[in-house]
Length: 252
Image 1: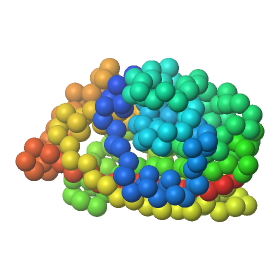
Image 2: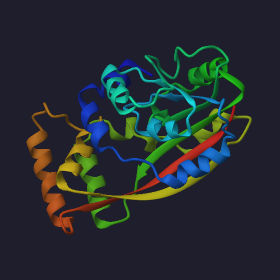
Image 3: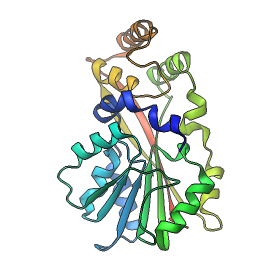
Image 4: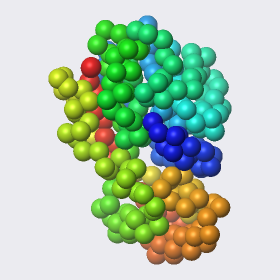
């Protein structure tokens, strides 16, 4: 992970922690069965952010290394996961995790794989993994099917600085599968929907690293446009954002 990809979330950690979407329960049910988890399995969540995904995996009761290079995000993860006594927090990246040699049975990465140098990450996972470890890659991808969702996507593209360069949308299925080669991962898609009030929509919008932050001179214009968009599409004080959650899981 390059320094910019690490630091760009420093001013957004609070909004990220409060307002980013979770993940559908059906994903975790499928996921647990797909990776042959035992009580002795050791998991590493790479670029764990504020621990939104980690929190769900922690319910399995396994030892989890929570690897996150950004100190603000890692602090939020500490707070979210303070009840998880089997979590070990590391200041590391996908390419230089700080994990012990031959220690990990399952690597997970949620909302972060598009930031990684894939060649260096593969070498690092082979070093830290044991017995052909599993790797699970997860993204929440916003749909653009409804009138509001299509308008929100257009809004983001209007105000984003480098959306297509840093978004998971830039990674196609072929590129992700190449990380697992010569083996082939399983691929599943799960759906879920969030209903958001305006403060929740604003918080989620401000959590995106490719949009102006709260210090930007563009912020008043952007929030005015967002509020107008919300007013046009809200029903009973909320708008709906639907997601397809993509899961790639396999061994390396």
